[in-house]
Image (cartoon, rainbow, N blue to C red; front, side):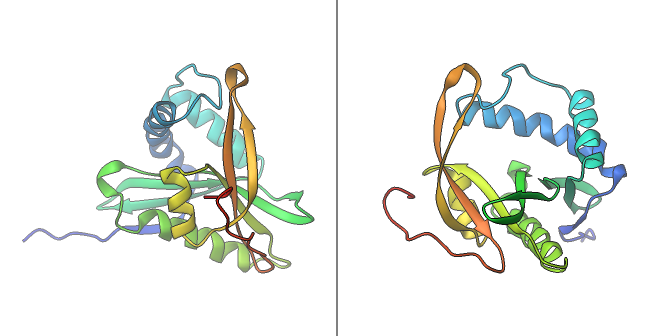
Length: 183
């Protein structure tokens, strides 16, 4: 029987940029199929995505990776520290797990590591993530411990507005009253 290493999650390093950029190409394609364009619809390749990721990391973004058998199987990227919603916060830019490794808790473990890291900071910031209302992403964020905070619209390329939900994690998080507007 072959030796199998379980999926592990950890804080990313510069060495993770190339494999994450390759996954980001697939993540972008998948997002374009599921949503009206929220960004420039031009398809970017791994080199362009790697450069953007390096710039983001240089500006304070954090990267988390999931691996199985030495292969990167998912990642989470969060922004650097910002001020908003009455305090300090960090936003989830993306959580992506390759399709064959989904529904195994990898995405939840990535977000749990992000939350744990943030809670160990002095004056821990809140964590926020946006997802289209009623989407698989919204269901995932709620299953991963996010509380619906409020509705938030995003306007993308061509002026297309997408109704979404802002989810939050934080030591002082006050979940919104659950109603049909958030569901």
